[in-house]
Length: 162
Image (cartoon, rainbow, N blue to C red; front, top):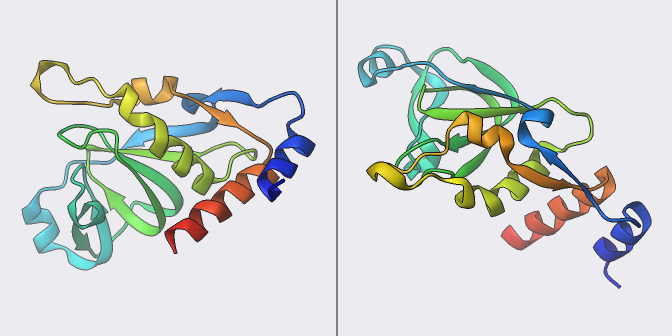
């Protein structure tokens, strides 16, 4: 039996509860930032947008809006629903969704892995421009195992990526 299986057996003997993203996270968006603004305020802090190339970095500016662990997601376009883990000081544009974990029962990195698996199912592909808006993100439900199980899942994903 793997360590993960042992932890699930110990901490989740009756199964795992599910939680809505809106119940465990603060959901927001950034602000409008033109390429001219970014050029005129060049600095060290990344500005993330809805794009997915270059890890979503649109440019770097001298100030930041957020400092800590967050998730961002691509709200619209061909890669709508793509999720990114962010740590440190950064800003986001108005076309980038932002999640701040508000629950002590959720590791941000675990949430990143969980959402990376499910968000594509919630993207609205109608009307020519795929979208995953904040109100839909808030309704997504994810399994929420005990913290030791979340920690082990994060370790497994991290070692797979190495």
